[in-house]
Length: 282
Length: 315
Image (cartoon, rainbow over all chains, first blue to last red; front, side):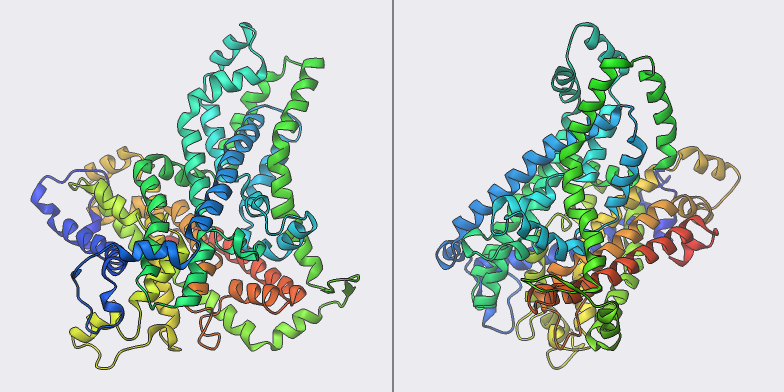
């Protein structure tokens, strides 16, 4: 703890005093990166699946396992399914959350209750709803369908609040001026609110993509048809069939992780803003 | 939340007060039409399931006919169900391990908040594991824990700490700590981000005033940073409670709850009952218990966060 007692946000007088912090942070960073390295190495060599001791550095890296993935399982099919489900979730989130957030910037009877309701819904983790959610989806006739997989994620409370914070920040005078110019409610949203809230839109896109892309439990429950399975389901199926007898399993992991990682690295700021604004608000 | 909303509500009320009549009614319709899609989703997949769970838990579920009422039969059965107690205990251990991750994340957050060079890179690296697909994380860690050629066994054997390879995920003592470590690895960055946001919300002038009064860095940490960080710590703890639910993916991929239910969590046991053993009604009863556990723990956490000054230190 002695390293951390420095005043937060203040520069110390001596820059060399930083070395213990660097040392600690480097150790943690190393621990955080090891699993990435290990899966990447295995996916490129696969040599240590059969041999002890494992080599720490890759020997003869080759991309064959990445090719294997396409032959061992219907990877293209899983990818397609995952993309469709994610797209449904993204579009629905961007539109529905914006609508709900815009409504919440208005004053109307029942606004307080609606806000209370949203905040309490946040405290109900999806995992505690699985049994009835399955029965409901069955009653709606949506088992084994893209819509059935995406529907529960169509609107996210955190993301509504991200939009709302952004809409609330739009100066009232701007909206009043637009009204005087004769813009309708819908035009106000499309021409003023959304263009001024591009980072909220980005946060919505990124969060709903990551959540839907990584979602495992719900597709596992609603989908029985192998043709409708998404990537996480495919990954878990692959594990059951082949155990870890082939490096292709790890190549599969890398291929599945890459889109999420790339998106995160490209839009880190929006991603983190989404998580923390949801956090501080709720 | 309620604190920040109250004034806003008032100003908004003042704004739209003059408008009334036909225009007001049109606006009211628009508001509810706009809210409808989200509310339908939350009703169908949050509120209705909550109620339905409670109802199902006192019924005998039948696929074709009507469900019949059987009172608290499932709860009585639960009381004698050893697997339930194991999974409840494991869930509690999972939750109890959250503060370890939070303390570590707090240390990291304080370090990356100082003026060290490359702090943004450190932040990114620590956070990198959070957005990953948990199923893949489970597979990667399973691989590192491998008995014969896994990285952990290799390192421990090379360092001479152990002689014979450890089957981490097949051993009764090691399986839960192993999964917990993988879980901390993934969630650490999220805790860090939450705490970092909290630290940066603390007004700088408090530190300046304290420095003028001659407070040491340690005093500033314990008297300013930690007390003011209490809401963020509470939030991190709530997230920690939630991971005992969301870790379904990790457990499912790494051990399926084995060996012999020794890594079973309530959430995996619920899944097994509902979707593998077709005991939908019993799964509903288990869910009710888990939800009550969540509510009680959150309430206790909230009391601690808002209670005495010492509360934070114990976390």
